[in-house]
Each structure stands twice: as C-alpha cells, then as structure tokens.
Length: 495
Length: 140
Image (cartoon, rainbow over all chains, first blue to last red; front, side, top):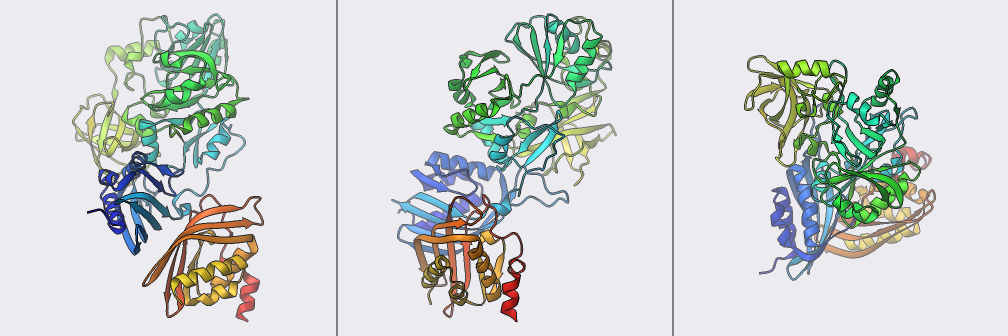
C-alpha cells in the first residue's frame, strides 16, 4: 500500500533522527525537489537529495525531531515541528557547551503515487550561523580573492604570511568534507606566498636552502621539501616548483621564508634574485577538479603528472598550474602571474564549478589530518627537525652542503629523540588553540599538535610529537582544556 | 473566527498597513512571530509597536499564499512575502510558511517561518524602544 503523506513525513523524520539516510532515499521520487534553507539552492533529484541529507546527517548527532501540528490533505501534508541536534566536527564553545543546531520549522510535503515529489522546509537560519565575518585591519594584507571569499560567505580568517586567510565559511564541516571528497572545492589560498629564486644560480641556491636533492629537477617539475635553520629545525615545508628554467618558487606555509632566503643569498655568493612575486594561488581540490579546471585551461592538464607544473592560461589569464595541493587527494593549484585579474579567474572558476556542485571552502583540516598532510602549523613552536616530523625521506645528506646539514647528519646517526605519531583520542575534542600535553604510563611526555574529528572514521583523531620510544598501540593520557581523555598511539596516515 | 479567516484578514491588513485590524485579531496574550523583527511580540502593545516598525520601514508588503490547510487547533500555510523597503533599492520576495492558532475567535499565536539570514533585520533593537513615542502615547 502506498505511503500517505503523513507516513512519509514521519518516516523521513524518524530515519533522519536515527541517522539512516539509506531509509530516506526510497521515500523520494526520482525527480523530487528539496527546498532547505541550509542548502545553497533547490536540490533536484533523488540522488542529489540523498547526498545533501547524507552530508547533513554526517555532521549531526543526538538528533531529535518533534512534530507538533500535522495537517494532511489529499497528497499534501503540512507540519510544524522542532529540530534538535548537536554538531559533529564543530568544537564546543570555550566553556565546553556543545555547538547545537536547534530550530523550529514548518515542512510542506507533496506526494505523487506514494513518493515524495517536493519537500520544502521553512525556518530562520539567522540564529544558526555566525552573524558576521572576522573584522580586519589594514595593516594585514588581503588576498586578491578577498571579495570572492566574502561573497561566498566566509566567517573566520586567520593571519598567515601577514595576510588574511579565509578558513571557515557558512557551511558545516561535514558539508565541506563531503564536497571535498566527493565533488570539488575552491580555496582562496592567496596567503600561500611564493619565495621566488630567479637567475643562473636559482637551482643551486634552492639546493642550499632546502634538504632534498634537486639535481634531477627539470623544468616543469615540483618537489615537496623542507627548509631548515642551521640547528636543523624546520622553518617550513614548501612545495617547490620549477616553472621556468631559471626560476624556482618555494610555495611556503606561514614562515618568513623570503626574508630568510634573501638574507642567506646576500652573502652567499649566489647569482640569484630573491623576491616574493605577485602570485596568489588558488586550489581546486576534489575528484571533479579536472572537470572544472580542464575546460578553462589551454594546456592539456589531463596529461599533467603528479607534482608537475605547466605555464599556461586559465580563463584567458596567464598562470602556472601545478598538480599539487593540500587535500591528500586529486586537485590542482593555479598561480595567476598577476593579481590584477585575480577575481576574473575566481569568477571563471566559480562559473565552471557550478555544474559540478563546487563549494568555496577553506583548507580542510579534517581531511588533512586524516591523510597526515601537515603544514607549518604542525611544526611551528617546537624546534622539530625533519626526522621527528616523519620527513626523514626528504633529507638527502649526500647531495652536498645545505643549511642544517651538519645537525641533521648527527640526528640521522644518533636517531631522533622524538617522533610523529597518530592518536585515536577518546571523546569529542575542543578546538586546538594551543598544543595539548600528553604522557604515557611511564611518564614519557609529548604533545598533541593537531586534533580533529575524523568524518571518515567517525571518531576523534590527532597527530602528536612524542618520545621516540613510544610505540604504536600504547595508551597515553591527553590533557586538553575540557578534560583528560585517554588515547591510543597509531600509525599515519589514518586513511 | 477560524484560523484561515484570521490569516486572510491578517494578509489583507498587512498589505494595506492597517495595524489596528491586525491587533484586534489577537487575544490579550497573543503571540506574534515575524523573524525580520528579530524578536517575539506578546500582547497588543508589543504587536502594535512591531507593526508600526514594519509599516515605517516598508514602502509595500504583501503576502501571497499558495496553499492553506486547516485542522482543529491550527491553520498552516505557505507562500511568498513580497516587500520593498525604503532603505533598499530592490524589492525582495521571501518564501514563507505561517502557522495560526486561534481560540474563542481570537488568534493566540501567529508564527511566520522564513529565512531572515540573507537580510538585515527590519529593526535594529527592541521593538518597544524603537517605537518609544507611539508606545508611550498608547500607555498614557
């Protein structure tokens, strides 16, 4: 017997509260539409509805739907109700109160032949979202994509390389995670600055400045490498690009690498000019990245190998495109050769991405931790050397002299004192605002340097710097601002 | 007065700017919820002040209902709110739903459900404070 509208309504609410999207899909007709204020627009078709509902369910827990007035008439049902849930992946408030998603709503549901053909919800999202974005000051630089990020609903920036870095937008972390892992995302990473080495000695100087052997680096190649200080401590872990014969870019994290490189070059006897060029990258990350970027790019980037780059035009704008990124999955970075037309590039990508459900997001730290793709933020304030960071493979002690070589040779010979491990941490986590100390049963210490909810594993995970003797499988005690949960040491990456 | 009748009268009075007709629909402790005002209004004084705010900021406002369903105890409806504010260049059209509860011929609750997030609210502070002269006048 076909479902009545009231039955459809109640089954949907019940399956949502139990977090079972598979039971929701068969309720909808193939051509159904979903109007939900939290979505960016009307959602068309059963498959897309299931995707949206699935993402929403993934980002919520302890869900309760309470129906009040329910009025059924023919093939339609109206209902007024209340929705209660806790967010997953959004750390609690400073005092530990969980972030909640509570609201009252009206739903209007139409059926055809026992299937839902329209589900419209009405509620006010104003109290559910940040009221406004982080306020800024002129002393810190803006990305040339500033307006694009603002228009896309950015709510929070951090300062990175003396530039505002849009991190958090109005979507939930779960929605952004799904967009990154199943569709495509656009990131304003204009703060990811380049240290440009230009001249006959560009490659030789890059060899001296970084730890990895670059002797086989041909034009059009990229390398993930490390820059250390003379004590062997990591300054940053840049992606190195060689877009032209005499030009090296070190695409670096939050560190004054250009100042450092310029200082080293001044008295180093290298025939090289060091500067920070007007090159502000974007990242297009996710399985549909090629579908978005390919048609806009003159060069056949479908043939561009992993960690390769090409000088080309994107949306008619001169740019370097590299098959690199910070998602641990498929994606590209686009480096326009001037900021003058940056927003034209941004708008072109947004237009091309619309058909693929592209979402403007910040770098997804949830995915990065799962994939153990770290960043300067992991290394900073630690004195960590590459061996401790798990980057020993990036140190080529036999390549000739480079900054930090002497210390790193000694560390390699003696073995590092600390090492980087994964952690499965019990319970929900607060936001990591400073590194959390940890200790094992024998009193050996360490610190959690990254910690998030894993959407892939549906549990809390972290990356920690611990005593080198700590082994996988050991239990440790983590002390964060809201408690002292136990954790289990594990390997990396998590997925 | 049934809920659907009250709803029709409310929509007509809102469009014509007739605050007293709307106030008269409500019982003494009637609740009026309109998200663009940013607060719940209870009783004739607050509702009157809220409507004064609506009428002062809008050039025009009209609710076009596309469906109304009633049952004992409540009427639910959906439609569009069309409004043009003095401060804005362009009019807006917001999807909305409404719930009316009535008892003994008077509205006990009229709740409007719409997404106000894309818009600056129609009031920047407490309704009674914003409408202080009128409210004071009504009390004296």
